[in-house]
Length: 202
Image 1: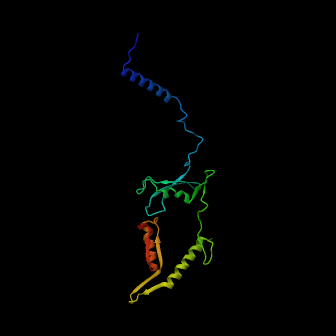
Image 2 (image 1 turned 135 degrees about the vertical axis):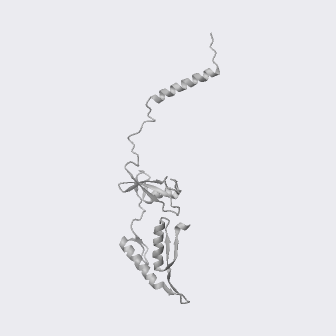
């Protein structure tokens, strides 16, 4: 006695066998879907802060994850209207400004090349020396006043009052917002500067 199997019957039997085997596999616990509790998520117990990339005038937003005062992760801000979470190659590597990953142990350590104090190289010296912030501000103020006093022009060749100095220039950065740029412009104009520019215009 021979049983004739049609094409439709074969496909139905094969589908039923496949569905039965899949139901059996999904009903059993599989190690592939189990959560590995021994591995700790790297962003656990971190606080997130929004920031702006410092490399260009694009103003892309980033999210800094911090734990115990240390930067753990840096990624693009998906809620930022400019970059929508994307970062260029330089922005994606901005994490290395503060921390680096060691090649042998893959441990995150502070970047040994990062400067955390003002540095000055004295005239005629070949080495840079670290100074305090108060000393740096005092030296900058002294140089500004000395240069301004020596180069200040009150009137031009026609006798018109100009009250300016052409020996000092101001260059703003891309991280400054509109209010900060306004205050910087007012401060520089009050000193008599005419050479004022901002990197964010490029």
